[in-house]
Each structure stands twice: as C-alpha cells, then as structure tokens.
Length: 240
Image 1 (cartoon, one colour):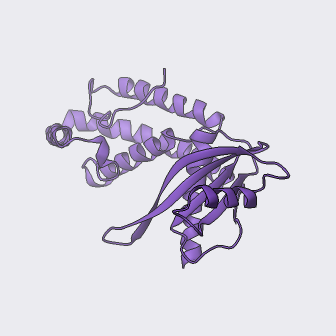
Image 2 (tube, helix red, strand yellow; image 1 turned 90 degrees about the vertical axis):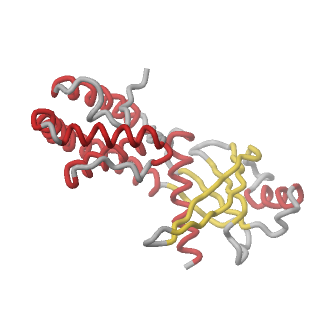
C-alpha cells in the first residue's frame, strides 16, 4: 500500500520526533520507489506541496494552504489553524517540530532534486512539432502523443485556458482523449489530422501538434503530465 502524508502531518497525532521520522521515511521510501521507475506523478506534486509547506512553517511559522486549496475544506483549514496556534504557544511541542523540520527539509530537498532530474530528462527528450500548417489560433486543437518505440498514436483534443493572478497571466491545458490510431506508412501524423478534420467539423482548420517521446517512461505517471507542461511552454513561446 502506498504511504502518503496527510496535509497536517507535522502537527497530527503523536508529537514525538522518532514517530514523525518514521512517518517521513516511509513516505520518502514510497516516493523513491516510484521515482526509480520514472513514475513522477501524482507524488511529485505532493512532494513539492509538503516541502513548500515546511519552508513556510520554518520561515513564517504558519501553515501554507494556498498552493493546494482544493485539498482543504474551510472546516479543515480552520481546525488546522487553531491547532497550530495552540502548538506555537507550547515551547516543548515547538522544539519537537523544529527538530522534525531540521531532519525533514534536507531529505525533502534531496528527493526533490531526484524528481527534477527525472522531469528534466523526460522533458528534454520530447519532440514537439506542428503537423501541417499552423493557424494563427493555437489555443484549441489536437495533440498527437506517441510513446517511445510505440506505433500507437494517442489523439487528444486540447484547449488552452488563461487565468490571471495578481502577478502574471498563467496558462493551463485541458485535454480529452478522443482516439488511438496506429502509426504506419499510410497513417502518418498528417493523415491523422486530415481524418480529424473530416470527423470533427467544429474545428475546420485545427492547430495540430505531435509530441513524441525519445525515451521510455510510464505514460500516465510521467510522459503525459510532462508533455502537457512542455506543450504549454511551447505554445506560450509560439504566441509571444
């Protein structure tokens, strides 16, 4: 069974250094096992969240919840904040938390570097190319994703979403799997695009891009999420 950490693992349950250490090492061992087979997600995102949370506690003595607010209900958040305020006023408990953070942060940082290396290795071994003539409008269209040494082309319809925070405009990507076809001499990326235009006439001149992996990696846990992020960066540069 995969070991995970609760959002408030630092302040949950038994306030004992050895117990917290046991929890943390079990969680990190699970992540390392996944990383050893290049399975990045969803644990890489979870790992980043916990590391940022610890850094926020260390630097500002408050729990971070803005990065993954969907994981917290209002009731849970209020409970966490109240519990944490009690802990801050308890010198003995805070001393344990300080010890746990001193132990945990280097461990988190070390395995985060492993995750970043895997991410960058996969991202640097992706080829993203337009299929046919690229129209001016590229916020919607098709992605043709090809795994390493695999004839199957997974066809996705994509849509770029743009939202703003107080500092910048951010782009997101929504994708829907609509087909899988086998690549061959007669079934090229260009032919796939032609067939898509015939079948889905709501996009008469769709932006279409092929993403091919040059190294083997798990599709759902690595290739697809890395490809999505790389594609958003690609489109952002294309639109600049």
